[in-house]
Amino acid sequence: MSTKLRPTGSTDMGDQPAVYSLLLAIIYVAFVSLGLPDALVGAGWPVMHQDLGVPVAFAGIVTMIIASGTIVSSLASERVTRRFGVGTVTAVSVALTAVAMVGFSFSGSFWILCVWAVPYGLGAGAVDAALNNYVALHYAARHMNWLHSFWGVGASISPFIMSYALTADLGWWSAYRVVGVIQVVLTFVLVVSVPLWGKVNPVRPAAHDAAFDAEPSGKGSSHVPIARALRIPGVGLVLGAFFAYCALESTSFLWASTFLVTERDVDPATAAAFASLFLLGMTGGRFLAGFFADRVGDRRLIRGGFVAVAVGAVMLVLPLETDVLALAGLVIAGLGAAPVYPAIIHSTPANFGRQNSQAIIGIQMAAAYTGSTLAPPLFGVLATWAGMWLFPLFVGALAVLGLLLSERLNRRVPPRTTVEGLATAQE
Image (spheres, one colour):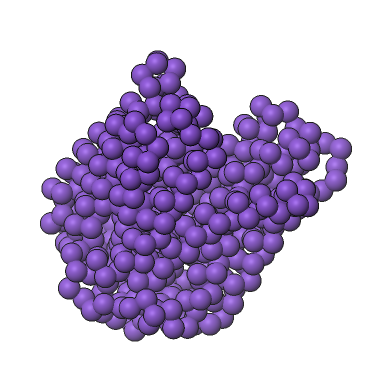
């Protein structure tokens, strides 16, 4: 006879549903806000570099500064969050991002832009790690997928803000100013909401789970040093899988359109449209995944996602006369990639324990930013040497690597330590 699991603590029908729902709404808005600044540099750089009097390649310097800041703040997020609490860290981090956006809007030279890139990176990394860990601990898997879908909404909106600013002759700086004002408003909302963050109890399996019931990851709890977190069995595997996923994602964002044009002779306008569908596929895929994430479980979402990306890569490389299969392959890869990032994050507390989750998620964020930063230029070097035809092989190899590492992690971490495993054990 099957026994259904019902999470204890605060869930959708938890002890304080009003607080739960209000805070969840604030977190959804925060995820949209997180995505807003991410595409602004890329969208505005064709005009920005001319106004600032620097070569187009200098965009890489700005993005490297931002990435460095995100890596540093991600690694420090565990200690900072335990000391001040996730609500305070989130509010301060968004405030840093708001200050950076306003600073960008007043930057009259490239070096000033680089200065403001520092608080932008520091704020983005800290809030990313803190929010992801909080959602993994306190909300169901469906919300993790929907929240990351809302990040995609924010990332998709910002190019339109920049486009309007340029079309209306308002200047690229006005787009940063608009996003900065939005971030300032969100900062005010987050400051007011700080008392709410401690009133929602973590979601945990009804059956006893020592790994999950251990000391919570929050304000006032003991610090987990990075060195200790790295020694936890399976952490190296999840970091490798996360690195591989973020590497294939960022490589696809940058090089998919070029591959379609140079290797498949696809019309540039069509290639650009389908390359954008990879991001739209991820956004839509995360929204759809939210409807069945709780039933399917994080492990199956990760497994199916990596397999779908690999299948899409194979469809890209098939030497057929028609381009329809290649274009469909890119969309399938985007849909497959959709649930992997949220599922890896959401499974962290169950895999490694609540007391370790903030430290490990912070390291995961650092691995993510490292993969996103290093993989696209690495592929660019390889493509220059061997040819753009390597693109689907590069993406497919990263998908297979991520799949192998995540499956090995599943064997290292007993299924009973996850909600999915507990359900299987009680059936």
